[in-house]
Length: 433
Image (cartoon, rainbow, N blue to C red; front, side, top):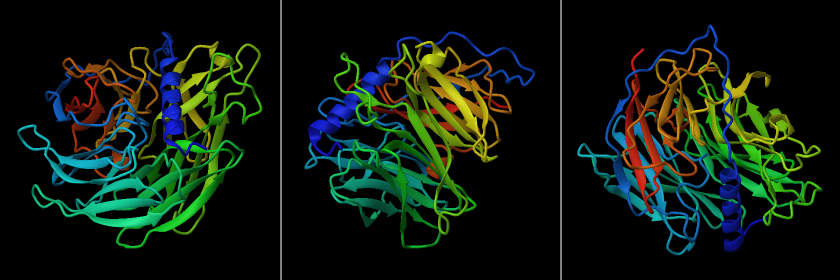
């Protein structure tokens, strides 16, 4: 189990190496379909705005770019807000900041506080209350407050968690005001656990339950449902030695990201979570270090289907790293599994707008309209990123699982730029139907 600073930094670098090892995006595309995606011919949006140039970057520790599973930006009735951290790897100097977008494109900080050097999560409730989910040694802390103009008073709730854990913190909200937080526990043995903390709408107390897992699972995506249900997806995070296999002589770190699981419950308050589905890419002759990692994105649509964007490299792919989209039905069955568009970048987001249209947002600034089934893409819109480039782990969006989704016809985007310390914002306008 990585509990020390050096081990945590090593794990982060291992994941970066895994992503950069994807040396070739498959050029094949899915054949034409009668389920044709609409053409999107007008891609407009605001100029890039700088939220801060003081965000944590990869030098010396974990950055705001790390993970990708966290919720970072919300759009509420009071405006657009984003949360980020400013730290290297010193817990004594790490802090989170909450910034509010003003009409002139500036982003003043309206709240701040100490935290563990791990990216925070930002959620919103229907009444506009904001929740910054942070971690300190031995505790999960939720800072909550409702903005009053350009000010906010945050009240903290502390929930005890085991000390010495790198939580891989994740969080989600739904339109009813239900909040859910997930922390990962476990080491390199065959046992892990997800700690799930939930608060129902209108209830002050948090309730906690655990899910026992074979090996540790991390990079969780958390999807509370408006009907009281919950869906959680996560990637198995262990080492090849823990799986009974020696790592490659060229691989000094030896981490294995070749399996994932999805859990669900129809009522998080009353019923435990059960496995909805699992999958694993197993070693095969000539392909003994496979990858199957849905860290890229996870989204539950209005029909209850789960969309996973994932990396796959194994015998089935001929050893090439593929970037794929899988749709899982409410019964755990695979409804669709196909390649992402070859023009898409390494890191992508899948979302459904308020009109029920599906979109794929790529880290290279391409916005693809999807068919009604969500399985095929149309001609992409190119968003204006100026001279900026989104780095690992791509863009964060104000989507349904944040509790503060962008209004109709818009998409609020926050992302780590290639300028050191930059945390950037773009308002994209979705092409009309």
